[in-house]
Amino acid sequence: MPIQYYIFFCLTLFSIGVIGVLTRRNAIIVFMCIELMLNAVNLLLVAFSKMYNGAALQITPGSTAGIDAQIFVFFIMVVAAAEVSVGLAIIVMMFRNTHSVDINFLNRLKN
Amino acid sequence: MNAIIVSTLLGVIMMFVSWGTNNTKLQRNIGLLGMLVLIFANIAQMNGWLSVNFDTKGMLAFNAIGLYVNTILFVITFIYLWINGEEIDKIGSHTADYYAIFFFILCGVSILTSFDNLLMLFIGIEILSIPLYILTGADKKNLFSNEASLKYFLMGSFSTGILLLGIAFIYGATGSFHLNMPILNPATNMPTEHFLLSAGLLLLFVSMNFKVSAAPFHFWTPDVYDGAPTVFTPFMATVVKAAGFVAFIKVFEIQRIALGQNTWTIILPFVILSTLLVGNITAVFQRSVKRMLAYSSIAQAGFMLFALYGNSTFNNEALILYIVAYSLATIGVFAVLIKMKDYSIESFNGLAKQYPALAFLTTLFLFSLAGIPLTAGFFAKYYMLNAIFTAGAGIWLLVLAILFAAVSVYYYFKVVQAMYFVEGTPAIQPIEKSYERKLWVIAIILLVLGVFPSLMFNYLYF
Image 1 (cartoon, one colour):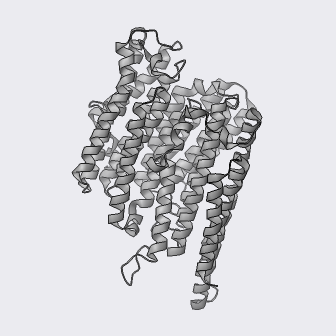
Image 2 (cartoon, rainbow over the protein chains, first blue to last red):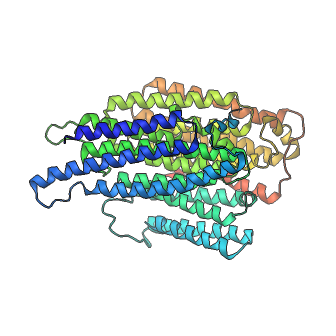
Image 3 (cartoon, rainbow over the protein chains, first blue to last red):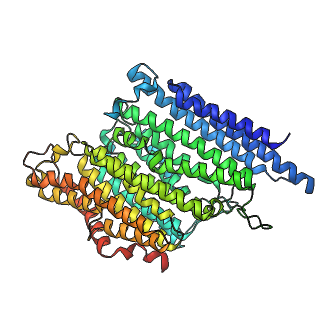
């Protein structure tokens, strides 16, 4: 399959994430949309990795070209997990004080 | 490598300290001692006395400027912790944990000054920001702190997503995460896969602007700086932002070729001017000094962005001097602000009568922020403008920068005016002599650098 399909698919997923972040009002759903953005990037990186690997395999059999993108994906997963743990803690902290996870709460500082 | 390893170890040690003892004074002193160890470890690597090195497979590269910036930021953090130590104790009941968080942030800082691979850029930024979300929300019962921390967290992760998409595009175009990735195709001497690479670099540019709070992407900054516990705001506005700038310059030192010099000289002045405009003009209308300083930190970020314009040693010199002048002055102003009972300008009324020395120090810090001669801030701005002039910027850019600096004098002087020329009783907690003496240290550094700015760069050349 040509790489373009993967790029379009990943960009669609990423855009769904961005639109979700910009329009949804529930902190947890906003958070899930951010995770969706990160996972779209993961998919894109794996697709590019496969693309470079496939191209290199035709020249030198047993090539490991493109493997670094897959390593990057693991790092993104680890960091995303760390971010989840901090983010959920912050949301829980907010819920304890206001009994809601609504983003509209975020307007006290404006005035 | 020393700084990364030692800061991580110290962070872990501080976590255990909170488990071993409840004495906050002891915890604070262990934290300060740890900072000294960290500074010493970094200087040892700088001078080649003792350094832990192993093959990082091209992930990290240590150069003189990176290590020097490390030292400067560590010393600034030390001064910050030394002055604000007692105030940090008052936030929550986890003093040692805050120090652990500071050390983890400094680990992120030392990665950001020495990365050589976009993977390390990503990890550095995340190690830097995730602890900051916690620090912003440290005041758990305070709704403002909660709001600031959630907002910072959502905006920070969103910009991380954009950063990652940019990195993925760059990888797709060049097949490498290395900082000196093959931007030019050897056959045609044209950038490879031009569209994908440019798109990736632009996304990277947007996301770095988010991190350093430059103008079209600055909207989270005032709320976060305003809502965070006052004692942590100067740290976020100085050390963290400075590390962001160093990383920003490192990424775009070479990669700007791929964007094309013409594109670069259009988008960068646009970002700089809008940052200066938004920061300075909005700061004029603020009634709270804390919020005014948050906007002024956006304006100062606009000045620091000038360091990206050219590509010579002048830029690094100017950025280093600017980081020192801006950080020390901001820490000083916040150290006074934190003693105020509320943060309105009126609470400064008549401060000069009651605390003449403190009023003088505040004036000096504000002068340095505004860039009045004989303070470090003047030469910081001068070197910055000199650097862009050498890089061939149009004279209109310099004139506009100076005009905006003049606007900034107005709102800084509102505070000075309240202290000296308005009658009233300042709403301030009692200040001890020892606290004032600590502020004098900052003031003396600012004055010395205001007369001999080249003291900062001698190390780089000898």
